[in-house]
Every structure is written in structure tokens, then in C-alpha cells.
Image (cartoon, rainbow, N blue to C red; front, side, top):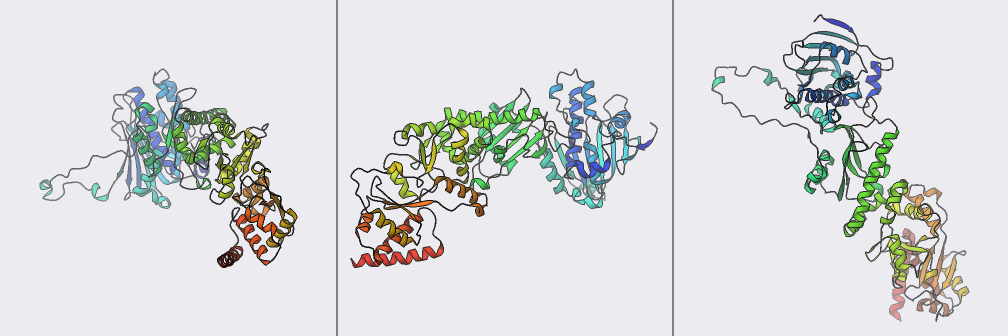
Length: 624
């Protein structure tokens, strides 16, 4: 062939500085692009000559001494015309024309060619100050071609010397990008982007001593030949998610989870996605064990396209609430942009996202219906995902509404319908819950001793969740959620209740608390176990709780609460009968602080005074 010199032909919008500066957000992505090209070349060979492609592979060589990074494949290679078309014209997709040529191939759907993303080769100029391509086409009578460029624009193309089918891309790494001459760095990038590519990839380090002729010296022939370990590919060409679910064991799923996400603790369970229609999608979603409160949960969904890593947690594909999970999603038909980093926003992506949501809901509802005990066992770990999901996604909420569970203080798990059935006679229009079973124990016992179930809603997400259930899940419903200290109407009984001087007790409690505006109520509760309670308005408390959770405590409202004195309590009865003196004020203040403790911790000064007063009361009791 005649030597050719020229400039790369590009479309107006695909200028090389844009490629270098904006097209790829991470420089290391060039490794993914070049290895993907090699993978495409071998995939093409499989289509035209499956026998020849049987043992094909990609080798990545790091030659630090020569400052070179080499990518070698034994795929179809390129002819002179193909180099002109695919390399000398930026933004032309060689894969597309190849697919058109072999459109009659019956295995076309499964060809797995990645190259239709385009432009990938030119990412090498982000780190190289010189690039060489040596290639020989598989076509009979083809002539080897050598292509060389220092800036990605001007090039020289001559007849090459390559004797075997395939392509070698040699990058002379610039001084500023020397990190890519470190084997550990290249391995790190290959592990990130290429760990599931469909062609075996080998990473080789070329050391200076290996370049010397072996056998130098008089005794070379006498030296025993060292047995070299068989090299192993750095990637898994048949990842677990690409297999049929029936061919995978529980241990396979757990090992894959540990390897991909570097986790030492097994997941709770998983969902294997294997969809052929209306699009091809494979993947595995894992439900991890929660180590912290909901606010500290961070998941990771890895997105692949044709077994090539694209990005983590792309919101267009993965519904927001599923970002709390860990998993791998692979769809060769994702409409990626030219840099393969972001999805183009279209209805196709939305359909994929909706389908993933449906599959997750199907798995959860199926477990609820057929493995209720297992589902209940997982509930403490998975309920934040599910509650967040029903609040964020209407379709998910519709599917999951009958599978929402509420744990009671005695360890039962009830659906909303089951709660209403068990407690509807005594509480027809509300569910009572506790946000702190230990602190609110006295109030809880008032309900449980009447046979009323108290549910536990003690996570930060529950503040929003109960409001969602009241006003969004079923707007027409009058059913409400009340904390055990929010209202006591269902816990009062006037039968055989003593009548006490409410005005006198109100005056005493106001003086003891130092609050002249304190609201005091005297009510006959169902038993005498609790002498005093602080009852706080449900809506005001929720608003303030939300402010604290989201870091907006400056917007909280003044607390609205009242002191309820139980007229059945012997302690309250004696206080009402006693003339107000120093000791009655002392006891009233102690009762007030005890009630306050069930609502929230006392301030440091209050606690000091509470302890001092407690000691004084103990001394008084000892003298009686």
C-alpha cells in the first residue's frame, strides 16, 4: 500500500478538544473503551468464524520502561479501507455497518457488539502523546496496516508488519499520566469496568529483565526451566447474573455478592432478573442487612451494558428507593450517550425502570403470601426500603399496600387489616404506636392491659410514613395514627371513679412546674397504675420531629401538651386531699418530672434537681 498522510475527518460537533475535556468525565475510562473495541473485534470473529474465535482473548501489557500501554486482541482486525472508515472518521460506527453486512446471521441478536456507542478509541488521547495501531484483517489476502498519530488529528498510515490476525493498540503514555504505567492502577480500572466482559482479558507486566534474550551466559543451557503458573484472566466472562436462575445456588449468590460489593456479611435475600421481553435485561438485586439507622443506609446498583460497566446508581433506570439496595443490572439496549456514561432520557428507559420496580414488588408480595414467617423475619431490615418505596412510587405502593407490616410491642407482626380486625371494637378509627418502648412503657401498659395492640414505629422514616398513611395512602379514610401519649380518650372510664378537686390540683401543678399557663386535666383512667402523664398533640409533635430529622430545628413549633392527673391513683387522691404546703409542692414537682421523663430526657440542670429531690423524698419516706 502507498503511505498515506492526512487529518482525521470529523463532524463539526465532535472536535478533539471536546473529546479530551468533556466527553469522558474520568480519564481512566479510555481503558474501558479500548478493551471494548477488542471485545467487539472478537465478537465479530465469532459471527463469521466461530471455530477461529474459540480461544481468542485480549491482553493488556504494561511496559513501564518503554512508557507504553498495549492492548492486543486476536479478533477480526481491520483492512486499509476499514481503518480509513473507522479510525480516520470520528463518529462513524463500525459496528453498525458490520451488523448490516452480516444481518442475515441467525445469531445477530446475541452478537453482543459494544461498538455502536462510537468514539471510544479517541479517548486514548486523554493520556497518550502518541498512539499506534498495528492491525491485520481476517479477510483472505489482507495487507497489514500501521496507523500512527500524536494528537488524534494528524496521522500517518503505512503498510504494517503484523503477521497474525488481530489488532495491537500501543499508547505512549504522557509524563502527566504516568499513573497508567502502574500495574495496580491498570488492574484497578480493569476490575471496575471490564470484570464481566465476554472475552477473557489478561493483564501482563513487561519487566526489563524479560526483554533480554533468555539463555545468555555459558551456563544458560544448564539452568533448569522454571515452571510458570498458568495465567488467569482478570474477568469473569460468564457472570452469575447472566446465568439462568435455576442454575444458581444460594452459595453462588452469596459469593457473587461478597466479590462484587466487598461485603463480608451475607445479604438477606435477592431477586434474580432474567427478562427477554419486551426488552433483554438481566441482573441481581440484593437486600442487604442494615447496620445503621435508615439515614445511614447507602446502596449501590451497578449498571452494565453488554457486560461493560457504565456507572453506579443511574437514577433514570433504578427507582430512587431501590438505590438503598445493592445489585447489578445489565441491558445491552440501554440508550447510552456517546461517552457511555449517561442514559438518554426516553420512554424505553422508563419502561425498564417500571419493570424493575414490578419485579421487586412481585418478589416481596410473593414472599408475603407464601412465606409469611420468612417475610416477617426480614421485616426489621427491609421495612425502610418498603416504606420509602410506597411513599415515592405510586405503582409500588399499590402492589405493596396489603403487605405492609406493623410490629407490636409483644413481637407480633400485623397488617393494617389485621390490626383493625383485632382492635376495631375498642379503637375503631385509630392505631396506637410507640416511638420509644422503654421510655413510654407506662403509657403502653395502659393500652395493652385493655387488650389493645401497640405498634412500634421507632425509625426516623416512620414520622413521614404515618402521615403518608393518613393523608396519601387512603385520603378518604378517617383512620389515624396516634402515639400512646397523644390522647387518652379511649383509656378513661367514669365507672366508680372518685371525684377530685380539679381546680386545687391544677393550681398545685402550676406552682410546682413554674408554668402558670400549664394545662392540667383530671381524668379517671382505666386503672391506677399511672398517676400522671404528659399528653402531647400528635400533629405538633410530628412537625417538630420532622424538623429535627431534617436539621431544621429552628422551624419547630412550641410544644402543645397537657398534664393528665389520674383520679384513680391513690397518690393523686392524697395530693388532692392534702392542704398545699412545701411537701405537696415537692411531690407534685417530682410527679411532673417523672411524666416529663417519659416524653424526653431532662436537661442537665433539671436532672440534677430531679436527683436531689429524689434523695429528699427517700429521706422523707424513711422517716415515716
